[in-house]
Length: 108
Image 1: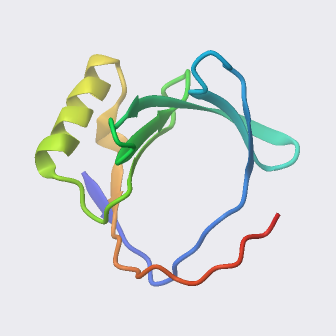
Image 2 (image 1 turned 30 degrees about the vertical axis):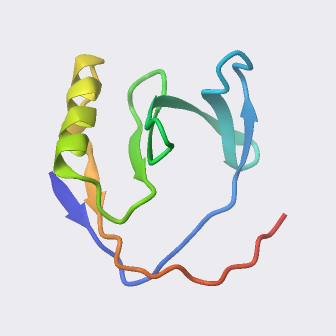
């Protein structure tokens, strides 16, 4: 598994539309018009402490955590479930989370 770190904290604004109103777990997201992508919530912590986002082709995959570090046991359990669902977890890159929360203005 690779690690990635950067000296600059960045963020991006996007728009998303729910495409499965029964579960609210399938979204169509656009980072800039006219390009969109499928973002499916495929795993979610009971208290929303983490979310795993993928797409139907299994080409893209993100594990998002509300904390800087995820417990190793939890991370390995998520990886196991992903592998069981034919996701290639060898391509995941763990990113460093060294930045403090910054004051930001929300742009609508």
